[in-house]
Image (spheres, one colour):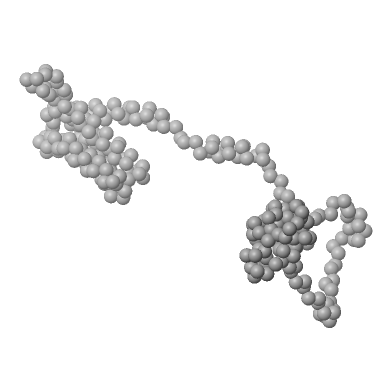
Length: 267
């Protein structure tokens, strides 16, 4: 690149640098960039920008339209929708829009800003979760009745007071309480797992089946106890005793299986 500034007095005028800029463009075969002008001619950014604009060729003008093409299509006839006097009276020359002709005029849509917080408050109020504590009050009498029925059923079938750690401790426990704790607690938890929708399909089906089985078993146990109590029985027949004795084992198996299925879903 051999284009350099000639000996001149700084700062040089843009008109004096235009020939050198054109010579640089001719050597490059294209328009030089602003940085190339700054570096080669040793000028600042404003002069480099002015030189680039000076040597940039103007775009070709559109060819004139022949007169015969202008007169072939008749002018569209626009029928006014309002009287001419009304249009002239409503025209305000001080409010002429500067928007392009092809841009349709759109009236601004008023937005009620003050209504948004009210709507959000109404939506939050309608989505409030229902109260749960009344259900606990309703469950209290059912819990007392179920607890008493299972404890008495346990006594009819041989459940009673035992020493848990013979030879180590004299602590005793009435094993009849294991029936209401095991059956009813598992039924409530399996029902929750079934309806929560937080487990896979296999665990949900198992929870549904075992929950229904536990509720039916609990209902049959209450019916059997009340029938024996009303008949004046003090001990249950051996088939009932055999079934009741297997209840803790069945609850243990169902609980372990449900926990395994839920743990397998999380892995």
